[in-house]
Length: 285
Image (tube, rainbow, N blue to C red; front, side, top):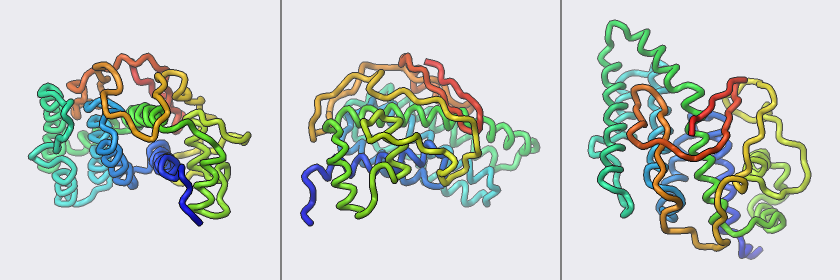
């Protein structure tokens, strides 16, 4: 069977849906796959989001990977190896011509602060138990909710850059890739479609209890705003935008010692709630 002409955009949406399921489901062990997706996406379309937005999201996912190793009681040699792998002393490799000296300075400061925090824990201070408790709280659900929000905004920009979704075309590509699988029978695609506001066939919202991952049962989640509701439309095209996606926007503070405040403070006036484990974490605009 010949490759469907719309296979490219559809395949990108499939990968985005799988990555969204990982972040939404708090499957930290699969964050490296999300990071790989983000790196590929940034290389192909650096204009989807601002450089700081991309780096803040990637740094947050990497930090959570390292923190989980600490909280799992892994040997400090393993923790430090992971730390230096994700946060090399040379700093991030920058290929973005839009990244300013101020951008690089702020990101370097945030990375340095986090590395110092982990390295100090590795020295086994007297109050290690207390510091580990603080670390767990600092990188708990509110932190993950912030990363989820950043990723949601990223994916919304991706959806705006891709050709207008045609459900039948998407189904044709899925049938070509995985015969016998329908859009509505795939949990990842169904959930992604609901959150992105896709015009898919009628189907009850997927039950979060069917998702594999660390989530516990919780009350029905508040529906996330469809990205069409608060992001400007991009012209349908197979070519992703190469220019800046928006004007300079500050970012919000996330975390205590892994200080992301230098990355700015967001102005996006969105009402975002994450109700994982029955808790609501509001991300201040």
